[in-house]
Image 1 (cartoon, rainbow, N blue to C red):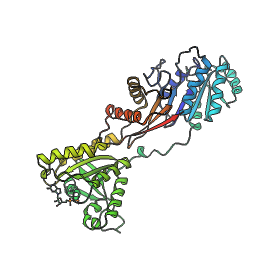
Image 2: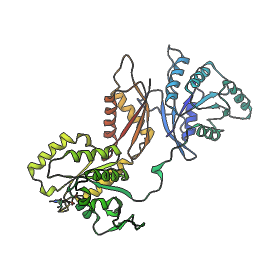
Image 3: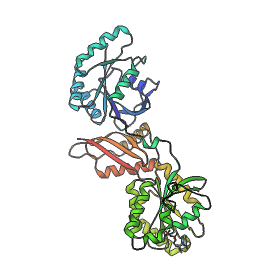
Image 4: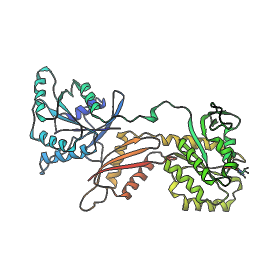
Length: 432
Ligand code: GDP
């Protein structure tokens, strides 16, 4: 989502204008605790386009001098923004502080839209025109209080933003795509047969060029899924014998096409490198993950204890995955595979609102501030979820965060929101 920073000196009506943009009636803007005292961000939507609006109001003046402070605040917000909305007060004209902000804007090379606020009636419109003198192009006369002109202003803001990327995940879609993967003989086709039962439909048979169905529609726990590359699972003997390279390519291809992967592991045998490689492939592809420990009927007490230790030692990286201890032979817990897939997909698609994310960040930062580095305090300015499937977050910061601290934030994110079954990506955009 593109980020729009709203800047300007105090009392020009930034917060009222932000309320207009986000479509909220409340005249008082609640500060999001913690992240920073002086920056608040919101989700907004205009003409079907989603954006994040960052309000930079609310700092307290101190000895440092108003102009310097405002310029610094504005600079931080501007650095993180895709476009800037500069708000000036048409009724009092251009002030020194406005000009200080304009200097910062010029240096940033970001697209700027100028709002001349408090134009409540025709009479003040002439005063708005005086704002041409700032050298930022056409001033948009608005009355944040009455809503006058805010539609035209938002059109201008959208026009200033970079092109919207195509939103893949909002498109209407068919059944969710599931891949069953794992090394040979762990029980993939046995699980497929158990899951699919008799209710099966061929998906990709229209061309008539292949004899085997590539994908099948199957009903798992009352939900229809598209099972990726069922032919590959069924023909495993031909594929796998002496052609491990091709088997691996096929696995990779199935993972790429799927939204959620079931990695089948033989619980009765020690976990192998190959099992771990396949798990890593799923993680790297950013797919939802359910680990099916199959052949549970062949495990005894001792083996299960040993398996626990193997998981602890070799699979720490995948503690986020869903788990099912099952047997395709006896049918034990096969039904839980469906529940696990659903849970993992729900987590994979989670969308956290910008407000919720920032109040979470506020709590984390307040309780555990980033350690001071070389006399400087790296700060998280705000965050937003850039994408779902898998959840991908962008943190805008001043200064560089320690990788350790980023991992800490990611852990807390997992604790606070239910991300069981999905990888989570955290990007940091730092401004030195
Ligand atoms: P794939 O290569 O991963 O598709 O594995 P298969 O489904 O062909 O299974 C390999 C072998 O393991 C076959 O002999 C299956 O009967 C057996 N098998 C599969 N699942 C189980 C299970 O849960 N318990 C036991 N005891 N054997 C199983």
